[in-house]
Amino acid sequence: MFSNPTCACGFPISRRLEIPRPALASPPCPNVTAPTNSSPSPSPRHSAHALAAVHPPAMELFPDEAHVRLRSRAHGTYLHAEEDGVGVTLRLRRASLNQAWAVHRLARGGTSYVLLHGAAYGRYLALVRDDDAQEGQDSARRACRAVQRVYDAPGQEDVLFEVVWAEDGSGDVLMRHCTFGGWRNFNNQRTMMSWVVEAIPPREDPPELPPVIPPLPVAIGGPVRRRRVVHQPVFRRIIQYVRADDQGHVNNLVWRMFWFDGRSVSHLRGDLANELGEENPHSITLCVWAGSQGRRTPLVTDLPANEQTMDIVVLATESAEHVY
Image 1 (cartoon, rainbow, N blue to C red):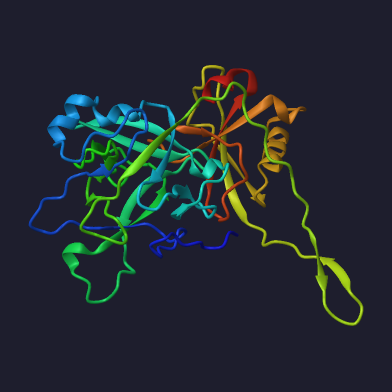
Image 2 (cartoon, rainbow, N blue to C red):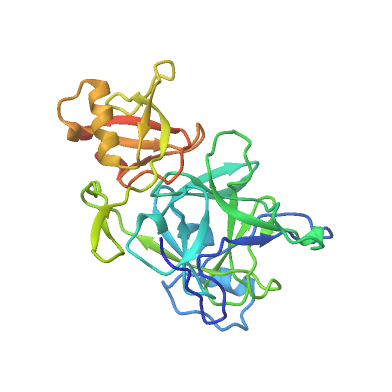
């Protein structure tokens, strides 16, 4: 696990993200912020209308099925999907799929929304009410927190965001949640959290799966120094899986399941190859499906550190190249 660094303002970078609810006097409406580096920032004196005349709609920073990183303008850190498959934090940039998010565009009720699902575990960025908020806190501004969730209901709203330009003329963008409104700064809740949107170019080739790493020996104290292998906790979960045809279609009546121990995606691919009678594990590609309304995400990193059931769609590797 990484230590929890702090930024210059003292904010713990790995702290879970909190979004206060808007005051009751203002109706809840989605609000999101993210900056772009594609052009010089206009003067802060420019109004939102002037900015709109210079820039295309902010939603164009999020083309459907593209991959992006979101960097906090205030803290210089990136939106990060935690390895537990649930938490969302801000972390310094590392070459990690946990900081890559796939764009899912959706129109509902005449409004265009941006949904983001993690490139690591496929779960969707969502805001939920924070039941751990401090006692006595104004209920009208009670905090919410960012989490990773499955997208499983047609009318689900906790995953819906709108994207607009920041009104300070910086060229950054704001993200507004469908229910809780604007995403506010941690150190100054009177201001909105603004984001720099960094586009991630598509890969030419699918990534290699991470190798299976054996447990490392550690030294034991005493007059005679010895070493022993310390095993990490073993996570046990149900894997529900279905095989897709060459066009990616699945039959929802033929799902199967088995118990899987550990987190190794290489081991999981091998076990699924055995289940399906495939002699070569490299002939299949795994996609995680985080909810019936969600999109499939290639599973190319080790499983999250939890014991929650995972839905896996198995594709033939030759027919899976278009998903990367």
